[in-house]
Amino acid sequence: MTSQTGEAPSGDPRSSSGPVPPGSQPPEAAEVGEAAQAAGGSEVSGEPVEDDQAYLDRVRREIDDEVRRRRAAGDFPPSFERKLDELFARYTPTGEADDYFAEALKLADRAAFFDIDVPTGSRREVRGLVKWSLWQAEAWFVRYIVDQLNHFSAALMRTVHLLDERLADVEHDVALLAPGALPAEDELAPPADPGAYTEQVLARLRSGPGGRVLHGECGDGRLVEALGAAGVGIYGIDPGTAAADVAAARGLDVRRDDTAGHLAALVDAVLGGLVLSGVIDRCAAAQRHRLVQLAELKLAPGATLAVVSTPPAAWEAAAGPLAADLAQGRPWHPQTWAAVLASTGFADVETHADDSVGVVLATKPVPVR
Image 1 (spheres, rainbow, N blue to C red):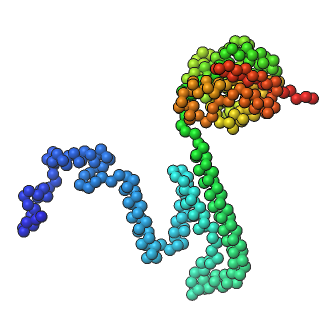
Image 2: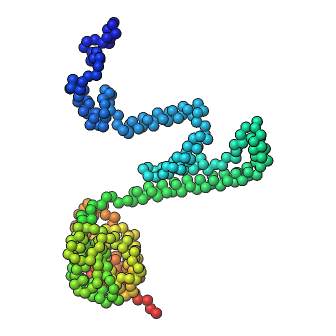
Image 3: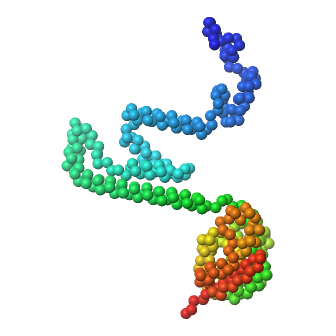
């Protein structure tokens, strides 16, 4: 409140005629200034600091209100807004930050209509009168074509909307089926070791046509080392666990790669043998069938496929409750693997199992000529 002379009372801080030196600010103002600077602000206005999202929302609302006001006043004709939409769609990529597919469909709906009215200019000028006369002479034909185009574009956009609805349902269902975040590969159960059945695996591999043998997801390379010492030409692949790094440091031929991707990149019928372990215990059923199909393609006739899996109870105990609950799948019993391999076309299926490991051996048949 000011006095009759127009000056502020002596107790009012506004009575200062100049800026207040920084050192003379009250303690409360200094604390507010420090808090504003910590929040990203540069000055203190005495009002609550507005976060970035709230500020952007307020600016968007102000812009929308201004556009509606100017549109109602006739400042923005529909043709001008349509031109802006076309330019925005041409130079702005969609789908990078958020899902703009719905907005793209709306723009496509507006652009799908073919306007039959063409600009001819003023008929008071000779050029405009000529254009108008030509248009009147040809309008019946153009209208017939444009009507068919509009019917076609309407049917096409309806089909696109139906596809969008179906795709949204599929995305929703897939999101429900997506597994949770798995722990690091090192925390999952290590690949099973054939242990006492190594000799059976070695005997079947030696009986094959020869050639390189692949161990998919070899872990610490224990089986690669044992078979290599017995004279088998073998190499291993692993997604890059710490155990595989130790195997590579020991001089074993262990490469970082995905089992399914590595098999898919190989030439057909090039492998003299294949050992699968690790990934087969935790991947989904569809992925296991895919691995078996790839094995059948990449193995040479007469070559052996060895599936070294962990029994379900032993795998859950080794992996722990977290990995067991979040993994896409759980191990199959050896009898299940034997049935799947036999149904895929493998022959001489042989099963060995105990409480800690299950080994299923099968041979790709040699074509009869």
